[in-house]
Length: 301
Ligand SMILES: Nc1ncnc2c1ncn2[C@@H]1O[C@H](COP(=O)(O)OP(=O)(O)OP(=O)(O)O)[C@@H](O)[C@H]1O
Image (cartoon, rainbow, N blue to C red; front, side):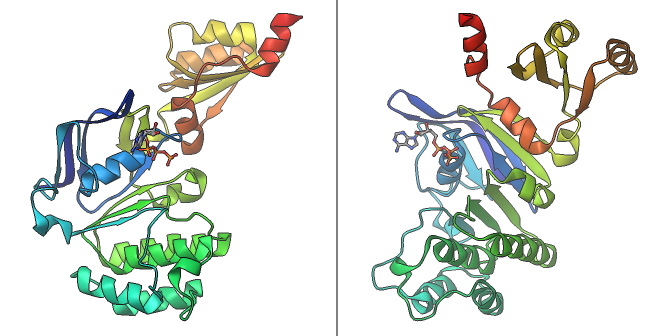
């Protein structure tokens, strides 16, 4: 079994919202996968279903070959760190670490101690009184020191300062290299975190729109800009992911790669072109073609 997580047509419906809509995906063991997408895309829903915090409306999910709801044995192989993690009222750092040590079979106290010092997590204050960043730091300590075979981090950095975030990224990579495991993380800080990711799944409105190795995705789209008419002529028959227009100028993100003939056309027509970053690609897949204020102004005049 090469996959840590396998889903088939996984669907979760809340009233009229399809939080997850027929998601079929396989996540390889011992990889770091980024789950990316706009607010409300379905990232937390996916993680909640994979960790048995929620039940699918239809479809199936397997983690380490088992249905997480039906196999308690799978649950202690999983760690799910979410942004709104709750702790019992009277918990201090000591209590949280003690509970984690009992719960996670691969727990590393040494790593936990190192992280607590680096993040400067208070030892006496009760967790409920922690600052936003300190609460995130505690989640990261638990998530990394658990060394759980399948670890989910759902936007684990909220409130963390830049120094602490980079410290998290460095330790994540270091510890993952020494103790390979499957890590799935959701983030909106894509430019900052893309160096961590080997694979990326982009979700939009509950559906997967991309599932590829990061290296493949770097060439998955390109951007062209210039006079709108020329840009639109070039885009004819191509899949445009996003479009921004200001005055008579347009910038489009287009799926695919440029051929030599395309390069010749672009040079001849004086259009500018270039690669898109992963952050831009994710934004392009989540692009809604709404009228921009500039376009509305133009239409009125
Ligand atoms: N319990 C619920 N009841 C009703 N709607 C829900 C519930 N949970 C999630 N949703 C809806 O399902 C959709 C997906 O939500 P989800 O939390 O998975 O998004 P997300 O990608 O994690 O977003 P974000 O980046 O903002 O954290 C959203 O439209 C959300 O409003």
